[in-house]
Amino acid sequence: METATKPPITIAISLKAAAQVRKLLAADVAAADGVRVAVQGGGCSGLVYKLLLEKAARPEDKVYEEHGIKIYVDKKSVIYLAGTELDFSDGLNGKGFVFANPNAKKSCGCGNSFSV
Image 1 (cartoon, rainbow, N blue to C red):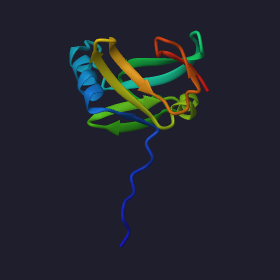
Image 2: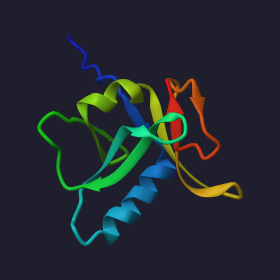
Image 3: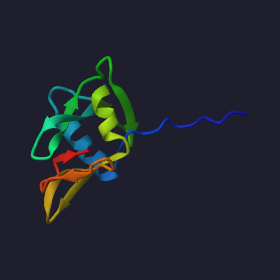
Image 4: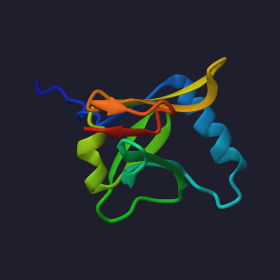
């Protein structure tokens, strides 16, 4: 008997981040159904994370789903995000989404920019 294996997750989302994304999706007038996570050149360390609400997958996207949240990742960003967890912090050090990326060799103080 074959057992189904779960495909490897490039990017995971914590329960806390999933709850925050649900709130954003519920308030979105454009009726997005998921979140796009991308990496682009820029920032003080060379690369910067992008997080956007998205209506649907693009032709070359990888689509992941965890805790009921669809996560869209473009083909270029997949390699930079392998093993990353998207979390949400509402502590004293600031409020917002946080990326725990094992591929980041260096990051800036704000946590939004990194290098590999």
